[in-house]
Structures are given as C-alpha cells and as structure tokens.
Length: 151
Image (cartoon, rainbow, N blue to C red; front, side, top):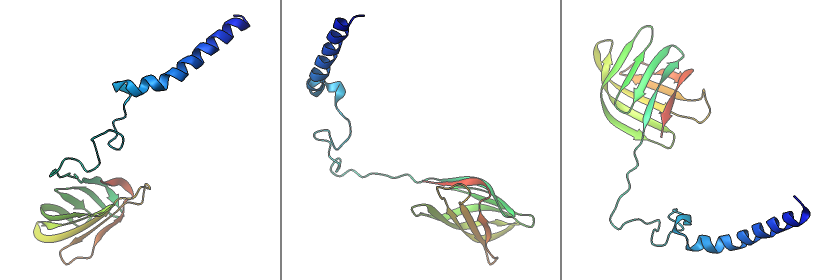
C-alpha cells in the first residue's frame, strides 16, 4: 500500500464519521430505550398503575455453634443441644439490608414463638443471624460459613 491509498482510505473514514450522527438520529434502531430519553415515556408511568417491589430473603450456613437455613417462609436452626424449625411466619419486615421475621415454631418438639433478625452485608463474612426462641437467650451471630441474601 502506498501513501496515496492510505490518505484516500483516511478521508473516506472521516466522511463516514461525519455522516453517521445524522443518520443515527433518523434510524429507529439507534434510539435509546431509557425512560428519561424516550418521548412520552416519563418516569411517572401509567396513571393509576402501581409498582410492586418483590423482596427476597434466603440463605444458609453456620454461625458459631449453629447451622441454619432461612427463606421468606421458613427458618431451620440446629445446635448440639437444640433443634428448631418454623411452623408459621406471621410477620416479615425488610429494611435496606436486613429482615426481621416473627412467628411460631417447634423447639425440640415444643411450640414456641421466635424472632429472627438477618443482616446481609456486601463484605463476605459479615452477614449475621440472631434468633430468639421463646424465653431462651438468642442463638446465632456472625455467619462464618455460607451467606444470607436480602434484596
């Protein structure tokens, strides 16, 4: 390739670049689909419509001395001296990175109330789960193996 061919290829490329923005304005395939930039698709949405945010809670693993699995509908916890599983979750409240669950479950075969607080942190090894079972002291702590996911 000689210098004359390289210059003519460069001029052709510059001409295409100069024409491309004008062609992109008229082409429907190049329109952004973000609500902020599409005419008639404002952020307010459809009049009378409501948005639903679906929250999620799930996890499993081990704390110091206890193993657990947790989801929106159930909690299972076991240590060397106790076995617990939820029968019914009565309330579940979400914060920005935590969830509080209250309900009724079976502790070593006996019906007790429970309250569980799960916290999800972005850093691994910083999630926590605390479970109060009836009148007993809380069980759980920092999650050492596994994780808790709250969205």
